[in-house]
Amino acid sequence: MKPAFLPLLLLASCLALEGCSTRPPCDASSCEGCCDATGLCRVGTAADACGAKGATCAVCASGCMSGACLTVDAGAPDAGATCQPSTEAPTGRSDFGGAYDAVNDELVVFGGDPGVAVNCQSKPEFSEETWFFSPGCGTWRRSPVQGPSPRARHASAFDTQRRRLIVFGGRYRLGTSGDYLTYNDVHALSLGLDATPNHAWEELTTRGTRPPPLSSAAAVYDATGDRFIVFGGNTSNNGGVFAPNGRVFALALSDNTWSELVPTAGVAPARLFHAMALDAQRNRLVAFAGGDANAFLGPFFRDVVTFDLTTRVWAPLTLSGSAPLGRIRPMMVADPARDRLLVFGGHDDGQLGETNDLWAINLAANRWERLRAGDTLKTPGNGFCDFPADFTNADLMSPERREGSVFTPAGPHGVLMFGGRSDCGTVSDVWKLDPVMGQWTSLRPSFAGLSCERSGRTNCTKLCF
Image 1 (cartoon, rainbow, N blue to C red):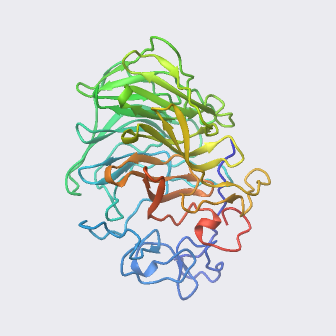
Image 2 (cartoon, one colour):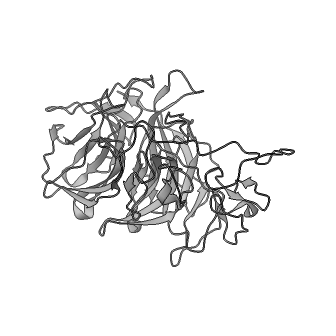
Image 3 (cartoon, rainbow, N blue to C red):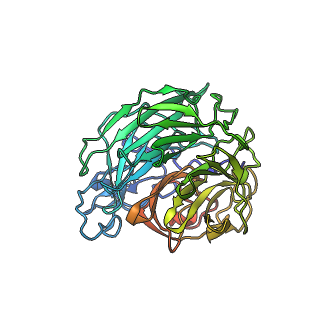
């Protein structure tokens, strides 16, 4: 596994320290915000501290995000949308949970890892934040309601019957070393109406045969059985060791009772960092890719396996057509209107590592179909954490290459995607995918975590600066 390339973009600066007589030049490589008239880097969301990275600060008539002005076009409301101005937004993050709420027409996300790696070594952090994004208005709002404890790498799914986000497990660590605390608790975010803060988090009291504490598992909501189903994940608390899980557990939401769905035939290799979706038409789980105990370095899985929820039989799904490379942490959602699954991104086994290719699994024809190639390799890297500025032929009509995002069906918006981890850090952008045309539309930009070409910078000597 090639670790994400995460250079030190933030250099020491005076920022707001009084009496500081020296500071580095204020430019896009040293400043995450804008540069004021004195050459001071200003980072914030106040109207007097806005502007693109390294550009001259400006007063923003339309508000700002992550220290940059929002233009009229950025987050322009849909026709008929009633929008409240907002300058707040989450920082970039990966390994979080989320779903789309059709009643409020919002993307809801919880938790995750906003940590920025140093010299390609991850420095995990843990969030307890809950955020709501309006795709019609292009604006975020943060929930004031206390939620579950901080965590990342949890599994989540949306309970459509009760309009709530279900969150299971995940991991947390206080400090930067030692074992993680891994959870097997269940929390539910019941949603209110009309963008008001009358939503509520609740820890569910469960009984029955609970799953072991897990991180990096995958979950779906089975509307037919009215249950939350979890498969796979990592049972290890040691950050340097993976112990993959191969068991399936279901939480009956009518009485909050866990049970293990013991297979009657077949077996799926235990895995973590995989993607999973529900093929409701055939009443089965479909899991793709992931890793085993060697998920640090690979090779990664590239198989597709199914678990029949009626017969409890595991079986490989044999697909024709050229297939994606093996990968970890890809995103996958069901597209029932076209009887297929959509797969995006992840970290693959090839020279590219982080990917942004878009695929479909045609369930009627049992065939892989590539919808977008995404970025392709142009100039190979020179070794660990050393990639040139022209590392890829960038598909600028696709999002930055990434893993660990939320990727969710979103009714009239097609599919929404937020955040994730790229070669250059964590991103905070929001994208809309038209599943019919296979076309992406940017709803909110990211001002961090982007490769050189996508950031708009010039004269870069490396991929990320």
